[in-house]
Length: 118
Length: 115
Image (cartoon, rainbow over all chains, first blue to last red; front, side):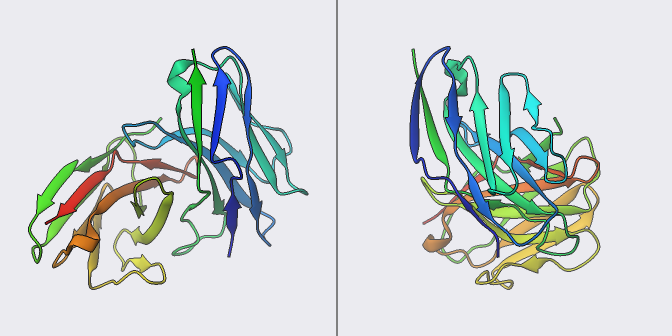
């Protein structure tokens, strides 16, 4: 079974600064997807960024980028120019690329609470 | 991003009653939807995978007779918590898989409180 580990329960960053959230995972598969989701106090899960394992290029979405190290099984999220609206729980998630029941479900890490200091 | 709705957002019920939660994908067809459960200050745990036109697949430890799932159309999946008890109180979140992007989009969640 796959596992996802987020070793930082909480991170704090000054507004406009850059912060990196860590995520490692364990899998024996070669093809899979990785995601970062954000959960603000409303508890709505919002997709931040996604990465296909077969792509070597790191995904980027505006101020959000990832450092995907497949051999090290590491998938960190970098948030540049942090804004107050970035404050939330951030969850790293893994999904197998295999089809079939259960294989498509996401495995989540325990989350990192990101605090933005004005 | 794609939009997924979930209804109701809040429900309070008496112990022993059944509660139905609806999950709809509004702007894409979803042959596969998922149901998760989240306890306070914890992560999301996958409960079951809902496949349109076929039986749901439940994760280990999830009672299929307790949590009935129906996926009758390409845009709607329902979760019925049967004979609810206080220990079923939780936050239930659905997601729909958009195959074109191989990405799950989440509904806003349902807070269930069983008295």
